[in-house]
Amino acid sequence: MANPYETLGVSKNASAEDIKAAYRRLAKESHPDKNSGDKAAEAKFKEINAAYEILSDEKKRKNYDQFGSAEGPMGGGFSRGGGGFDFSGGGGFSGFEDLFGGIFGDTGGFADMFGGRSQRKRTVQGNDINLNLTLSFVESCLGVTKTVTFSRFEKCSDCGGTGAKGGSAFAQCPHCNGTGRIKQQSRLGSFGVIENVVPCSACNATGRIVRDKCASCGGKGAIKHTVDFDVNVPAGIHDGQTLNISGEGDAPVGQAEGLSGNLLINIKVIQHPLLMRDEFDLHLELPISFTQALLGDKVQIPVIEGTTILNIPAGTQSGTVFRLRGKGVKKLRGIGSGDLIVSVVVELPKNLDKKQIEQIKALNESISRQEYFKKRAYKEKMDRL
Image (cartoon, rainbow, N blue to C red; front, side, top):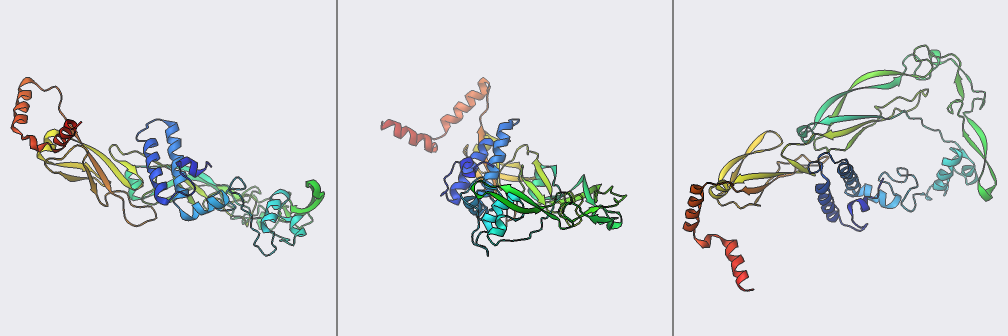
């Protein structure tokens, strides 16, 4: 992924407040509400959210700074971070061993040379399943349970996932003689030829092969099923976020003891026609007439659940901001809710007729110049130039 510091335009020493401010500014610029149909802006918005998700989380940020990945030393390979090897293990070379284990297999070679692990069983995992889920604006704010329908591989009940008839019709693998591992020679520069013990690919390191296939699954150990799954979407989820539901993906094919993959739910949120989201705050631009601003009024405004009434005091100026505490979005994995921030825009009438213009002129003449505080202060400053 892109460098989150570069994405938000902050230094590695930036404070949490600096990161938050940068995120808010960039998110507003590229928000889908302001860039309807702009795919580049949409991609940028998702990249900004991904960067902020890392840098706003103390643990993820620390992992990224040290290993180049928010998930830690195993999450980002060796792409960045200036390190990631752990030399503090029992043998003293666990990181070194893991590095060459990825090249030569799980055991042998360098592991044997440095007294590392001599046997390590490989865990097989089924495929992840990706689904898209569209939510209304209200559903994303309040949380919702949605049922999704999809197909996945599930362990065959007749053979227990082994692929063998009755779960026991096996024979010894002739390639590894039932050990599940074979020797392999590899050349590594000046080290010469290294002999390594690697998993047997013929039997998937099980040491046995299927003699008679299970009739139900055809020897795969898994059968495709259509399932209805209830997804509990938490309140406050953002557009572009992904829910990772562990173990609800495909079962591993041909591996009775393997782990199922994950179900990845990609969230798409339908925009609200009036409200714009900024993290957990909501923003509303409220146009009012000049008479409402002068005389005051009670105006109906939208909130997450329906509407409410906002009191506009007499003499309200254009640009006045009202903050309704707790009327924003429920905080994801947090306590409380954001605010609803209403910005007033006073709209002046156009195309007045002659009579209306004369009435306004008469009204203007009747108003004391002392009432225009900003105008008077401006004129005083101009006179001193």
